[in-house]
Length: 418
Ligand SMILES: Cc1cc2nc3c(=O)[nH]c(=O)nc-3n(C[C@H](O)[C@H](O)[C@H](O)COP(=O)(O)O)c2cc1C
Ligand code: SF4
Image (cartoon, rainbow, N blue to C red; front, top):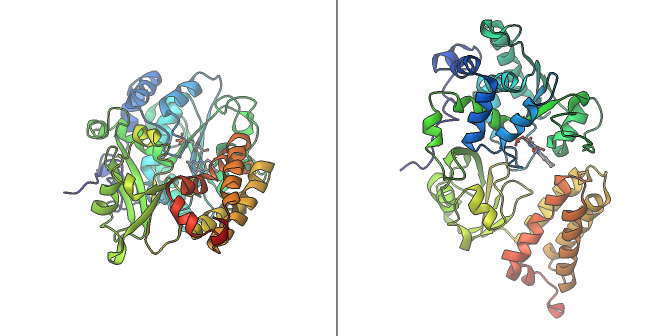
């Protein structure tokens, strides 16, 4: 039985996107029509009662964010985060490439719900070809009267433009993304006030991940019931995941919350490639934890993951077979963080450099017991004192390696110092 579903992702690879016609044929823009026929507060209630948590990684309740934004005076900028810089995460590009109108529609619904006139989709620099698809979709939506002045004859006027930075992981963090749009280097900034009150150009701002907008379009469509019937009582609905690494069938899948990791890897992913054995999975992107074999039956839901100190994050599931060494994986991940740390704060800038050095020692089988304590001390400081989420999450792999793969690390210690 196919364990994946096709609800939020139902248009992926099914419709042509160079014109808006196919999208309209499959019920596109019915959600916006419905939205415009009800009060903004009703839309916010619908989003709240769906239990939707932001799909960008932090899992902040979307309805609550929209409610906060709706209470602020003045026009709110509607930002869509399509930076997708987290390694092993590639689900957002599917929306850009295969269902851009769903996102435009979702952002327009947001504009109506919270009161906005201008929207920006921030697309990572590396998505050059896909960026053009989104730009064309925006132009088509405008030509069809779905963007611009008095949309569908209503009082809503809303337009969207596309912006890209120079290509840095940190630009996915909301305040760094805002700095980047404003023309500065992408570095997180102090939030004196909430983004809802003072975000882009110090104006009220609503920022959501691209999948979050996609889900909102579904919530107002005829698929809402189908979507809400999926999942668990706390994690309602579905999640679009990117499955990659040593599996037979890597790719983007829509899964109902509550499916197990084992089902994701073996039923959807076809199991471990080339008949090898499972060694570990990393969930949620490079900042996510390592999951050992003994925990493969964990349910993929916010509550089950939280109980084990894991997080759903961006929805990435990276699978590694038994040819992979934990210590070499630690090097790969820490190289990424040492490179992507923006350098603004000491715990992250220096902590990542030190963690990388230690990871190298284990990879060269020269680790020491003292290194284990050093990892724990550095992680503790980074988690408590880093300025933004990049620094707080960066030690996760090394911390979970100690927790779940201590024997592997021990094998990579200098023998006489164990
Ligand atoms: C280092 C870093 C990188 C991030 N990258 C992304 C990203 O590429 N896309 C994204 O939607 N959120 C990213 N986030 C999370 C955003 O800061 C923010 O929580 C999210 O875009 C809000 O939308 P949501 O509530 O719909 O998830 C990142 C956060 C951090 C700390
Ligand atoms: S935690 Fe890292 S990425 Fe974030 S501000 Fe500090 S140095 Fe920059």
